[in-house]
Structure formats: structure tokens, C-alpha cells
Length: 244
Length: 244
Image (cartoon, rainbow over all chains, first blue to last red; front, top):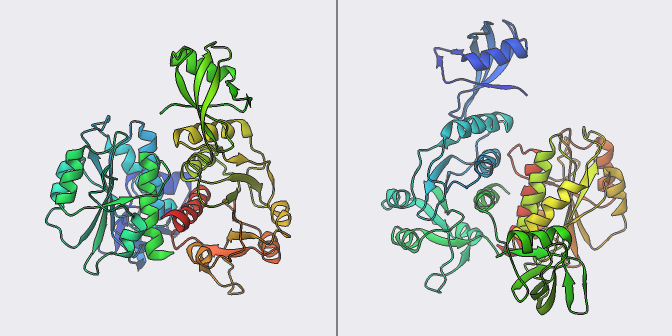
């Protein structure tokens, strides 16, 4: 099933951008009258009929709408420190999108080697993974912030389940698994945020601030996982809790 | 923590092969008398002292042994059809090793586009993922067989939990999630085998044979997952069931 994307939708008509038009008209040779499937990236799939088959800018009339198409029954934000090797972060973004999440926040930790991140490639990856996995909503790639800024931004968000993958050396905090934490999730929680540190882990200050702001420290089991694998394991744990 | 690997171990002495010796002596500049950590790939980590620091073939005396080092409390074999793009299969092998599994069997389905697979690169990836994730046992990469051969080989293995990620169109078989299937696992089961099909899915004949040989059809949730993501999701599910 070939899916196209556009955000240019009004009055029952949608217009494909140049890249999507090229692909639809030049590559796949669709013509006026053909039916195509288009997502708005906000969660809706439209069944449409092409009314103008210009390869520069095709347009189509909407025949039928499917809201929350390919959606998931949870709200998940992954705040993940960029990996030294960007391929690994891009891989995480693609796989997390396939499994299902709502937003990714690149967070820069005090021990992060990589302090900057170009969003363009990640956005392309998220769009194609969204189409490929037949979802209507493209996960939001938020602007990069420091770990402390991110933690602080959730300080006064009481209806969020806030998890941090961190194990304190001492026994000052109970070590529960992410699966257990999800099983214990309070009714009131409308969403889940999981914070994953860099290769060098969080600083003691970052971890302390997280506790202060209501984050629950969780472990991901005995295996020693790379940053991107730890992040995907967390996405899987949430997916498993809600849909498996 | 730097880990070396050798299978050449006898009488309390171990010899590193040329590549490992190069890395240990030339690159990391270890010298006679230095302590190093070496795995045998069978599950044991050795703390050793270098007695010969030749970059062509270093040797060391064993000071201490740690059996089942970085092991996991389950036995998992993943039988996964090779993906068209080998990068995706290699990525699966690396991540599955990090999380923890015992063996990978490349299986060729009737709908597989890729019918052959070179093991050398996969073996290198499994070795480095094993070292990187601090495990003593290298997952075994078995020889490629057809899906039907693989299914048949498990026909008379009663103490194995046999799962196939396949959803029958009709309701001839109950659709349970892999998580539910694991929760229902009989006491007698000593190990788990999960069979993951190619991009074109299993043929009806392959699926029917699997049922006949005692495979349980399971689903991996509502998301449409690529072959390698479905395979890793299954590894996650087993890991989660036993250690989270």
C-alpha cells in the first residue's frame, strides 16, 4: 500500500508537495481519476481521487477520511541523548516510529559527547517510517534541550508518568524494572515520558534533579544496552504494556 | 572494559589469535604482566595476566574464571528470514545479541526474495556485540535452512516452546499475543524458538506445516513491523517476560 503525505488540505481538496507529486505522478504514473491514500501527518488517512496529475503539484479530492489511522492507545514521549554515531540515533527513531510513539526529544546531557543534532534527516526518516508502518501520525521531533531543561519542564506536570533509566549506586532509590513501573502507573497519568542518558550516563546532578521533579528511576534488566537499544527497549516495554 | 576473545585455551593458559593480539599489544599497548579480560565465547570470562606480549600471538595465564558471565535466564533461538537489505538483518543480529539470545537461524521462506546469506559479516557483528554488551557467550549463527526444514526439525522436540509470528486470515486459529503465549508457557519447556517470516510473509503451506508441528501462532500487536523489527520485538518480549 503506497501512502502519500501532505499538510496542505482545505475544503475537501488536498495538494501534494513537489516531492510527493513527483513520486506519485512521475514514478508511480498515477493519473487524474486514480484513487490514492494520503496522510496528513496528524493522524488521519484520506482516500482520495486525483483531480490534477501535475508532477509539480498534484491535487486530489477527499472521498473518505480515517481518523487516528494506525494509532496506538498510549501517549509516549522519548527524551533520548543523541548517540556519538548518528546512524544509531536514526535507527532508534525509525524503529520507535514503527512500534509507536508520539514524540522524540533530543536531550543533551552533561556527559554527552554529541551536543548538536541536525533535525532534517531525522524528520525524513520519521516520515518514511510513518508511511511504511501505515500510521497517520508522524511522531513529533522536538527541539533539542539540555537534560536539566527537559527535567525542569516536567516538574509541574502531575499527570505524566516520568521515568528515567538510571540506577543509583547506593540503595537510596528502589530499583524497579520499567515493566513494574508501568504496571504501577497511576490512573490519572495521561502520558509517559522516558528519559535515556548518553553513553557516559547522567551526571549525579541530573539524576538528583530528576528525582526532585518526580521522575521514577527504572532499570531495563541485566543486559548492558547501548543508548539506542535502551531507548528502544523502553518503547517496546510501553507498547507491550498497552497492546500485547 | 576491554574484552578479548579466544577459543584457544588449555592448561590454564590462553592464546589470543593474530587479530586479537594485534589489538591487545599493538593498539592498546598491553605488556607482559598486564591483566586483561578474555571470553571463550562459550559463556566464561577469564581474568588473566599476559605472559607473552607478541603482537602476532599473545598468551596469558588464567587468574580467575567467571562462568555464565553476562548470561540470561532463558534459552532463545530466533529463526528469521533474511531481509532484502542485509544491513537490516545485521542490525537485528547486533541488537538481539545485546538484549540476549542463544542462536540465530537464517531461514529461507517460499516467499523470501533473498535466498542466500554470507555468514562471515554476521559472525563478526555477533562477536563484537557480545564483547560490547559484556557477555561471555557468543550467540550461535546456525546454517541457513528452508522454513519447512526448520519447522520439520522441531516436529519431535516436545520441550520447546515453538512460536510463529503469523496471523491466519480466517479464525481457524486463536490470535494471542506473544506476551500471552509466554505467560502460558508450559513448565516442561526448556527453550523457546520464534519463527519470523520474510517481507512476503509465510506461504499457506509453511503456516499449515508449522501448526502441524506444534507451533503456536502469535501476533506482535497492531503495529505493522518490518521483518527485523518483528524479530527484535520477539526478543524483547522474551527478555521482558524473564527479566523485567
